[in-house]
Image 1 (cartoon, rainbow, N blue to C red):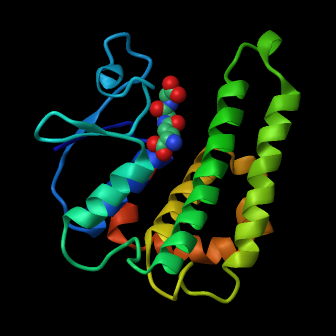
Image 2: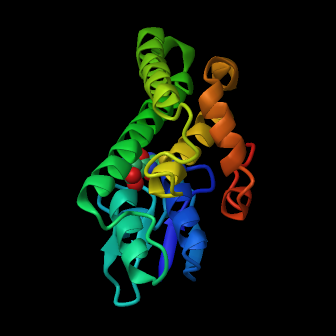
Length: 203
Ligand SMILES: N[C@@H](CCC(=O)N[C@@H](CS)C(=O)NCC(=O)O)C(=O)O
C-alpha cells in the first residue's frame, strides 16, 4: 500500500505516525499539490492528502478513516480503544485537534493571498478558533500524562501533530508560553521516534 502525502500536512503526519507506532510498512509518495500533474485527484476527488492507495487499487481517505484502517490492520496495542466510551473520547480529542488544524491551514492560506485580496478579518477569525481550541485542550490535559485513560493513543498523536503544525506555521501565537500544559505534553511527544521522524520541514 502507498500513502500519498505532503511533508507538512498535519493530517498526513497523523497517518505516518500511526503507521510508525504500529510498525506498518507502506510506501510513502510525497506529492506537490500545486503541480498540475499531481496524482492525488486521481485517487481522491477532493484533491486532498492524505490518501492511502491499497494494494487492490482502492483508495482510502480522509486521515480519520485511514488511521482506523491502519489501527485494525496490525496486531498489537490499539491506538483507538475498542471500548466504546474511551473510543468516543479519543475521537473527540482528534476532532478538536483536526479542527484547529483546519483553522490554522485556512489562516495560512488567507495570509498567502496577494495583499489586496487578503481578509485580515478572516485571518483573525481563524486564529481565534485556534486559540479557543488550544485553551480548551490546555485545560483538558491538566495533570494528565496522556489524553485518555492514561494511555498513549490516537488522541495524543492528533494533539501532537496539531501542536507541531501551529508551532511551524503560526509561531507568533506564542502558544507554548500561553498554554504550559500543552507545551509540557508536546515536549513528551516530541521525544518519540515516530514524532522525530515526521517533523515539519521548513520551506
Ligand atoms: N479532513 C482531511 C483534511 C485534509 C486536508 O485538508 N489536507 C490538505 C493538506 S494539509 C490538502 O490536501 N489541501 C489541498 C486542498 O484542499 O485542495 C483529513 O483529515 O485528511
